[in-house]
Length: 216
Image (cartoon, rainbow, N blue to C red):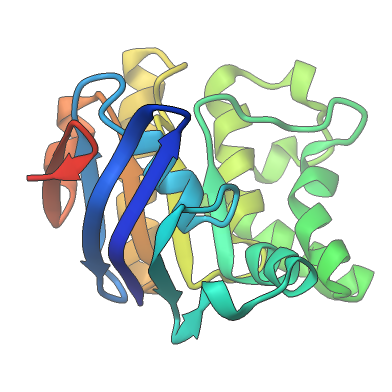
């Protein structure tokens, strides 16, 4: 589902990624650990098309990303890649249901169909009774679960999570970890999780370590 070949990235004289190679199968969860500055987040952003590599190739769901122009890349990102970040990045003026629906609306999904899918996700994430609450009316754990639902609304081929529980207390973090792993078993997307949380890292099918811009 994900194929990363010889990815390199530098910022000025600073080499961040030095020939990274990685494959992730459909239904597989891979965690990536390593010290700060090892290149984990940069790799995730490049895989997710939020940044571009200096060289190398990435293929997701049989689509070679380097062949897409900016418009097609934006469409591909919205429809095929789900993101979960350390901070939920929910829009404060919209309630939970509306936040979850946004990527579907951008895709052009009819309102009724998008809301039905969003309600199903919120139910699955134990948020049925919170769908009409705005982010400031939700707990940190609830906000992050809404963000997970938003990432899954378009049934993406891949789910990318960058320190998804880094802003949560231990109880909410543990709950989120179970959700991420169980959802992946049900939907069979490919999942990459960058984390400093050893418990979450060890729950993945594979745990990889990055050192100085290379997976070892």
